[in-house]
Image 1 (cartoon, rainbow, N blue to C red):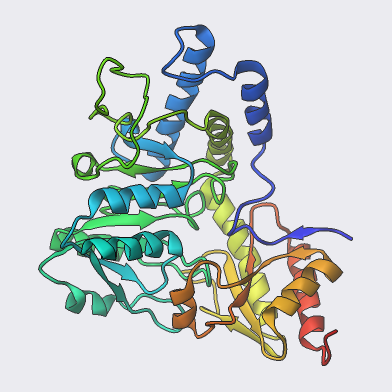
Image 2 (cartoon, rainbow, N blue to C red; image 1 turned 90 degrees about the vertical axis):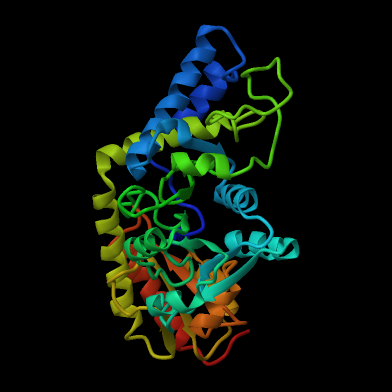
Length: 387
């Protein structure tokens, strides 16, 4: 039985060409740290780290490669940004579709007198832009928002939200977990003050590497959460104030950065436009077929306008968990089922508390795999008994 991987919203697989080799080469032939060794191997590794910062700056149209900070993942990035920036008395706006990578840190911060309001979204996940004005308070300081829903794929109009923030003197913090490497993102044009990214999804790199990028005037406003050795100004016991050392304490995930560097090189050659076109073609094919399957409800937008390659469905005559399990055991189709770490998104979409079956398409999926998934769904949704 062919194994068909349709869980790219969780982590992309397979990775870009050259990623595994880059990780292996670093571990086998280099293995040293940067900023600590005064020898050629350390300098060579440091050069690749610098080039990776430059690649990310170019990809996101960031201000300065020194303002690219590496973390373990986007969850850590968002924790640093939220807990390092917000203070008692602050109020922020979020969308009703947010992932727990935003909502759990914010929930913790409410214990320190930080408050938030959710901008309502429509039943298909579309942001209600008209509600933003009335939710503003005198102490509103930021908008924190995902670029695309990890549940239904609906895109947030980043340009419009960024312009709103710019007009009202608010900071704009963007979660790009589902869009980096697939959709064009321009920090300058979109008025993004802080952008959080992860390497293992659309950027096609390995797990365990992510980061964030700050506009220059945002740097002093975010306090580091972790302190320790950086290899720089080691004669002082205070953290450096300059970037990126201000936030990068301790040993970095250099194997992950080497893999991310290789993935970004592949993306530069392939282009994100080609990746996006392929993923949306598969998404359109899946949507068209799924909408014709009896007893199956497609969640979110019914076309590919303003959406990413993530589609959630709900069988009307069976528990989603049973169907997802059968997809894996009987058909070799790997999907995700449940609430996808976004409970309020499901409340907005009307799928709480049962959740959905999520299909998410990647660069190496094929039309034939989509057709196989649709055929399996049709058969499973037609079953009348489950053992």
